[in-house]
Amino acid sequence: MKKRTLLTGIWFGFLAVIIGWVTIFNASGAFRAPLDATPDEWFTNWAVVSTNVVLPLASVDEMNAAQAAGASGDIRQCMYGILNQLYGSSTNASGAGILAKMTVAKEQQYDRSTGESIITFSVSFRLTNTVGGVVGE
Image 1: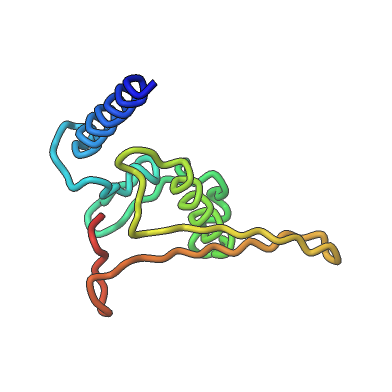
Image 2: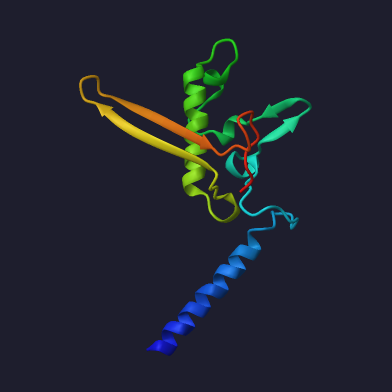
């Protein structure tokens, strides 16, 4: 019985080392800090074009072109879509996508009198100082 437990412990230790080794390289094989996820891992096709951040509509499930239109859209729907996508990515993250120094929480309540849901998102970051600059994972 003790030999089996020892072998199981060694096997899981070996797996942990292999998983840790794999997660310190990004998709192109370049070394990066463990667990520092890139924006593209959380929002599909995230890009920077010149001085603009591009977040394709297809990468946010809860937002469409009419809602995102600058002059006539709905900022509430845009923020809900982006935060809901951020929350979904955080709960579905694995390997290098799991963050410890940024957390995303979602709380949902139901108002019986109006039949509406009330959703609250909380996002927290660890910073290097009070001015800004997030702490690496």
